[in-house]
Amino acid sequence: MAAATGVPADPRVGGPGKLLADVLMLRPDDAELGATFERAEAVGYLRLDCPDNRLAVRLTAVIKEAAEGVWAGRLRSGIGDRFNDEQTTQEYLKGLRMLLGL
Figure 1 (cartoon, rainbow, N blue to C red):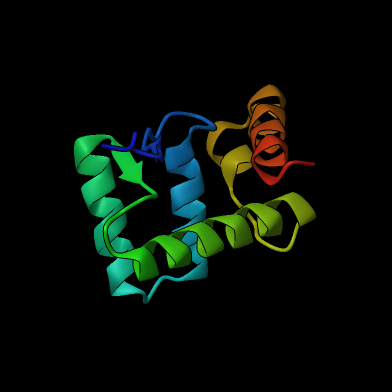
Figure 2 (cartoon, one colour):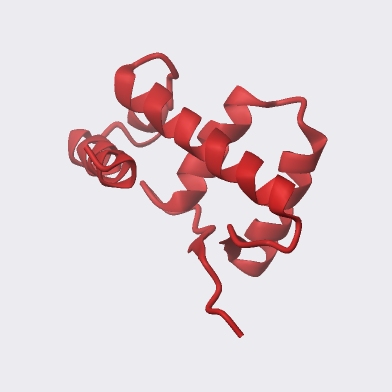
């Protein structure tokens, strides 16, 4: 059996949970993504190698789109407002840069 591929759905500062919240800002009316992220939050993990390959492709694409949007300033993450801490904001942006391979 292959190892699972995914990210922790941790809502802590700058964690992947924050990125999932940013993704939902892009697709607020996408019930399938919303349900997937709710399950991820409940179990603390988002699988990106889910059996439904169509969903895995969508998840990967929208996560990348959100990360690129926040990084480029096209999507307002709100992390700075929420935590009012420049170090936290910079750590989040550093994580996005690593995710995007920049």
